[in-house]
Amino acid sequence: MADGTIFTTGRFRVREFTRDDREPFIACHLDPVFSRHHLEHERGRAHASAVFDAFLAWQADHPRANFQFAIAPRDDPAGYIGNVGLRTDGLRPGEGELGIEVSPAWWRRGAASEVMRSLVPWARETLRIRTFTAETMPGNRAATRLAEKVGLVPTGQTGKRRWSF
Image (tube, rainbow, N blue to C red; front, side, top):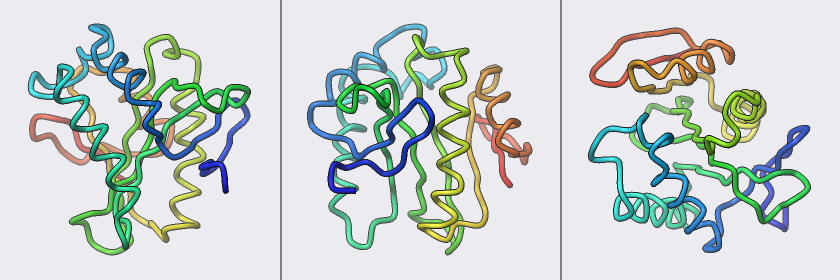
């Protein structure tokens, strides 16, 4: 879509990141409630800023292998409540790794499952992804429930828990 929207759900607009999303993205990552679900080296302003820069850079890749999108309330298209993505770089054709991060203000409100339930069909239709994987931190019960809700099954653990379907 011309406005950067990739898809919408009942409550959300999933869109390309813009430079205006930098500070809300970093603020989310600096929230101690949010960051407890990340490894130590994944915390802090410098890391969050570098990750954000990578997300913007991926938009210019041709062919594009990694897709990370901002999640905004449907009635506030410039807003930011989190991000969702699919990465295919380094994977076999037809495989993709899912990921989602939602601001703690949106936890336990069904936001992550609503967005993820739309991302999977989008990835199947648009990118021809057939096999999905994901990683979650051990002990992150909400991520475990989300993985199970979208149909992922545990496949192992190497520091983070691995899922697939």
